[in-house]
Length: 472
Image 1 (cartoon, rainbow, N blue to C red):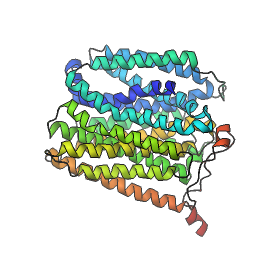
Image 2: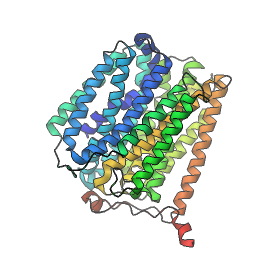
Image 3: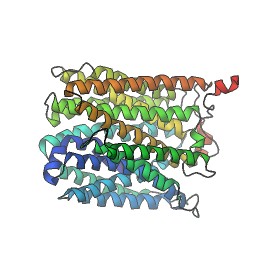
Image 4: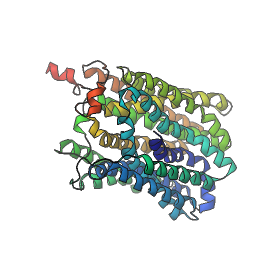
């Protein structure tokens, strides 16, 4: 467990921490808002792309080798970022951090799930939820401390040290394996398409920090990138031996789980960005006070992880995933009541709900997809789900944040953007409930023994809209 957490947590903290000490970076790196937004966006794109690259590499190379190279690369990239005196070096370091973390997700996470047996799987699932989403929710608190008291280079140095510890532990304990397809060729279709599907849209939404919705620099990369993403998924669906198992997870259970994770991820990330801007620019709170007010989301993730541990081996996992969607929707509704005078009381309540929603909605959704394929395909499945989730989570936020910042007053823009996110979340929830009902099969506990043995899937999900197909 320590290997996976040391591999993934450092970058995940940074993804939500940097926004609260952005003025420090602008001053010390002589950077603009657009340049830092582009750095953040492309690092997330690199994370999603790295997961796909790793799914390809682990077919031909031992996971141990991939892990050690990527962990070493993360150490080097962290040193590159912390020692930067200008934007170019900092951007290179942060982009490489994202790339190596995405690769580590696929190299390190599946062994954590598969090597401890059915008895320890609930604890493993809870640790994954805490490690992945607990660190994301801890980011604002860390970022607030750095934003108020300085020390961003110390933060990156701490990240480098943690990665070095992970490298050392991995060199001593990560077990080798025979790659499943050592003679497999590089996937010349999936990898380039994944690159375009990630880099182009994230560049486009980053442009909004210096342009507008009507600019071709926004429209063209986003539209072309999303079309490439659709082409990637379609090509993987029709390919006889795909890199990512799109066809096996195109049934009711994995589709609703993946879509749930996408919507929850987008809602959580967007609302977090909006509330940070509101507290900083409307309530004029310090970064550290902002981070402390958002900190209750950590408790929300802990609660969801405890519940996930209890239900992951039962038929209640889809209901927990749906409760995560409800959690972020209620959190958004609470944020509609925030004012400059009551922010200190309202925001912690909303943060608690958002943290619960993130933990309950994303991790169970990830496992609903993972249990729907043989365990031998768990790594590529995680890569696909994280690609889709990252696209949703980090593309919507900049769009609604730009809307909030350019809609009359920030107070009005904030409420409009939160309301839009609330409507999207509620409509998506209703759609997913309807899609699940049309599947025609009730919730079922996962059949884990044959799944861990690699002989069967844990869920035997019904086809999409199975009830409608029967009537025809």
